[in-house]
Image (cartoon, rainbow, N blue to C red; front, top):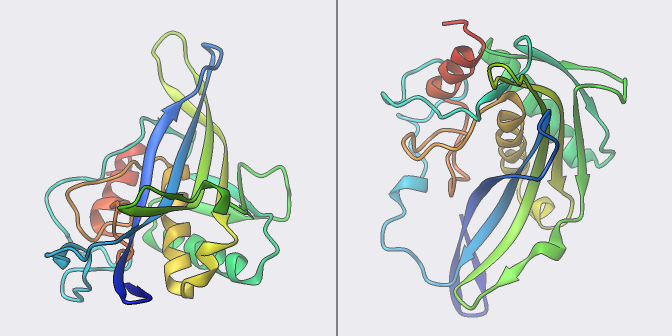
Length: 231
């Protein structure tokens, strides 16, 4: 995707940032995953990794994308299912969340159960994240979303069990993108809420950083199944 400002051609790439472990009691951990856009002021020489390739990309089709599994976060829900409450009232964002939930449900690897109960396990909402925009002279970085996850830690074996997740999409800059783009950001963030980490191997994975042209791959699906011992 390209954007033009004045006489400069800028490339717009998506980056989903690192995971930070906050200082919490030993019995619980709190993670956050940040999603940002990075606008490069110099056009890259090779954009093949983020270009569209219909012969390789897949939308929850179960077609193999490569030998390397999508990394996982190291935590999981007690079962491969969780209730989801869409708190957002913005039509574009609500639509994106609904589509993203449907896409994950189509994979059969994890069941996201929509509910009107605001006490759901996963809350999908939106907020203004534009204040996090940074310009260092080389990049303009804009946060697209952030997901917070809470997990309880078993002191005997160190197993981390998810207890809650808050998914937030930006309601400013993100809304300047098309509906498919917004949906894919929602899919990525829900991937974190389910238990997936970023991948550097599968160029078409929904969990691939710097890749707006992506969707759920077989590797993503297999990794979710491995988390919940369904392989």
